[in-house]
Image (tube, rainbow, N blue to C red; front, side, top):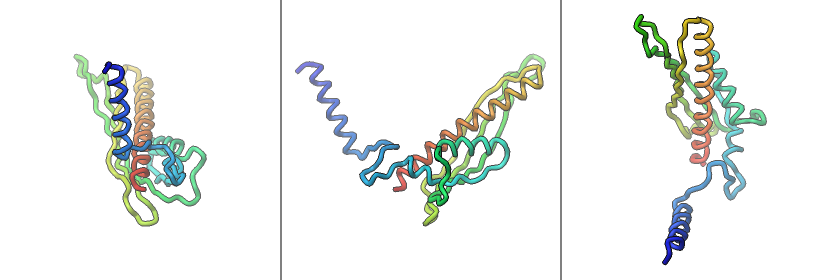
Amino acid sequence: MTLRALLSIIAVLALTGLTACGFRPLYAEDKGGDSTAADMARVKISMMEDRIGQITRNVLVETLTPRGQTVRPEYTLDITLDESTSELGYTKDNEATIADYILSAQYQLSRISDSKILRSGTLRARTTYNLVDSDFASLEAESAARSDAARNLARQLANQVAVGLRSGR
């Protein structure tokens, strides 16, 4: 038996094993025609405080409900954000040159009809930005880092919502 034939047999066995374990694509339609993308459009995202919460929520709305939010949501996503900043990389004069920004979210995805919690947990997004002599440049770098972390966190949350909806069926 040649190496090529052996590799072909192994590939066929591996694919057969994947279907036997219950593997199914996250965003594919199931036999009933339902899809995770359709379920994601039925998620009501709770309001969040301050600008970072607004950015996070807006990215989530764009990701979960690109055609607009539904009038009758079936699921709720509650999120609580927490921010922290720490200074790193000091000069000889004991001035910080780098700051580390961490945005954490505690989330809970639940079904409205029976209040069943489909998924909950904590996620974290971390960015680093430079602190320079110009106050304006440092503030702009911090603002950009906060926005980047909010977008990153929103994408992570969208993935968790998709997993929660898929496993909650």
